[in-house]
Length: 228
Length: 164
Image (cartoon, rainbow over all chains, first blue to last red; front, side, top):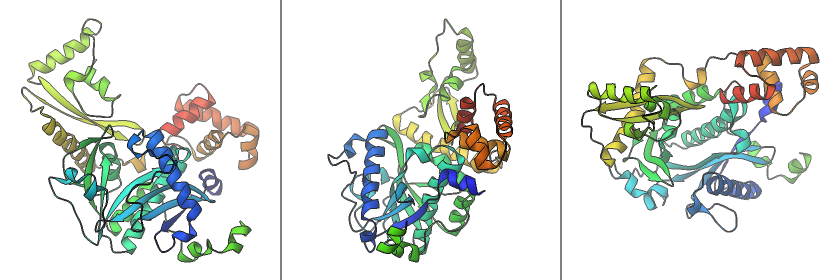
């Protein structure tokens, strides 16, 4: 229903890589600020606090890909992907969490981290699950488009039921550990079209979440910006 | 009155049964439950809460006379609990989170969703093309179905249960 769409806002999902970063300066900065707000203030992961109010670590470099949900120029959600062939969280900081099964490292495996949705888009069926669902579908679509077959992640245990309900397979790489006060486990998650399908069905997302290349390129066009 | 069941609704992390608080003097029934459990050989137990979209959803609990409660074992049990629950729900063909049964009608949900956005009955009537009286009627129906005393409470309950 049209008005229901207006309630939650229509987010579009954008993929930002080193190649097109120049089109998204403002959004990337906004997303680092949001990460700081959410990870340092809300979740109280004090070790991530930075004096400039931007949560950026050593893995936010040219190898990082960002999947952001943007609603009329406002960043409302996002997450980060890093190829496991580059240094990443599990390889450099949390290697001990992969002590049972070992660290997966390959060109077709990405590490998925720093997932967030802004507070006002979290509650409820129309807004909350939709934004989160769109970001997750965007992540999956980008990965599948690029031949990625698995994701690795460090997830809090309480997210496991959600992933299982979405139809994902989670392979623990080690035993759970207390990280920043929450029990977390390193997992490998194989992904394919069926995982994308079940994730879309779960969130009521129909069709592709990622914006087209044209729409992305149009963002760099000053005429298009002024028209909005 | 099972103290373990009461505690598991309030806590995110797994816990040993002995950690579920109760006052043996003020809740003799609770003490009785734990003592009967021991008679059945359930001396020590461990519980893994499973959280769904709106909080507590289920739990996986295990017990015995001399269970291994070493830290490493408990961490493994935490994992086992998660997978046991996932497998059971899959086998039982339970309604997934995405297929929750809804109790409000489309209109009732629309009206509450706009109320959650801070719109007045008059504004909602304009937005939805209804009369103000009809909007208020939908609100009353929603309040009745959600067992809410006020409009605000109805919105909160609807948000919590994923209706809106």
